[in-house]
Length: 323
Image 1: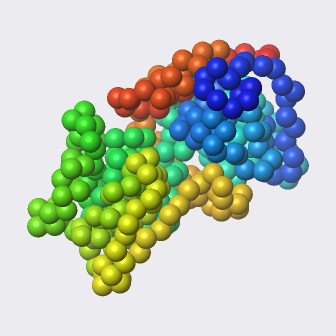
Image 2: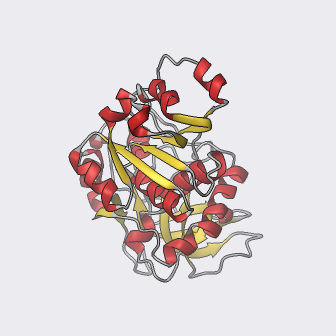
């Protein structure tokens, strides 16, 4: 839990009453939970969770087993392995989740890899397929592609018949992009905007923000789509609109956490139907950087904030019957 707002000094291990699942909810016994930048922002008091979620317990993606079902739940049974999204409270041995915001974990996946999947792959799939209207044959640029969402997006583009190009500022990031089977592009080359060399893109997944946005119209194809998912480099930019008009292009922002439950459930269920089978066949993979015991949450947050990661940072909980 977070005892106030601030840095790692506010992180504590504490006991709480086990929550009760209400109608349409399930109680999940958590085996692994993924850490995300949103958890750092919540810890610092900059990113309050949606109404009803605990303000002092982070954790927005979990992997575990169904322990108890609330009234009206018919799709899950006690003992089912599940992974998915919660509004918050995932940094706990047990958490209540909307039954529609969970998907079945394929037998081919262990708990570590399963826990590294939900936030990255649901976000990437929703941005590509639902918001970005990805079509077979599309050429797709993923800016900031060496992170979790970017790596998922590169794989999904290829799996759905597109051509993926990823950008990074570092040599190791470019190597990681190539290892995923995509073309790698240095961030500086994108900002130079040489369309004769770069070509044009039907869809851009923007994970960096800042100066990228001003340059993107120069490499957009007619009817090109830009979907802004992250703005780590800044959210203020001077943008010329005439190129959007001339290209009949679109610029859309998206996120998952603050959506109404019904809309979030649609994203999770689309992931369950279109992405989970590919994960089970190993056509898509998630990478784990490290898994820390829940008692070492501070060390996990330190690793999350460090540079050079090539996978998800996780917290693990014991699998005994008590606790």
